[in-house]
Amino acid sequence: MTARTGDGTLSAVSFDLSVWALRAGATPDEVRAAVRRCREGWHANQQPDPRVVAFYRAITASYPDRPAGPGTPWEVAPLHAASDHVELNLFPTCADEVLLDIERLAGEHDLMLFDAQDGSVYPPPARVES
Image 1 (cartoon, rainbow, N blue to C red):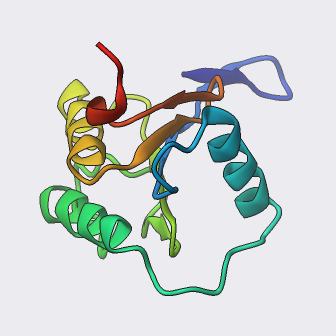
Image 2: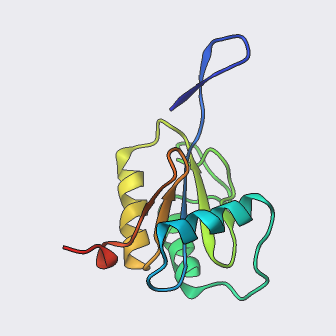
């Protein structure tokens, strides 16, 4: 992904995803509302959802963020982790394998996936109707 800078040149910007632990049956609009609250600085003061903890541990086992070493996919590290979500700011040049791992782990941990580029919300594969 690229963005135009003030002088008109193109520069790479991060590719942003987040995974969300919302109630079963949560709608895409509920995910978008949760994203808005996060961006406004509002975070629930609650215990971390075990799904979020498990996802964070799994993704950072493959792609460490503390510290983020050479070749890391993370544009921003450490990852932003809250009680109900993890925000993943990736280099636009990261390998497709990283994106596939994020999608797979989100599904394994029953997390909704939010694509900040276009506002799309993807339910875990188990929630997708056949």
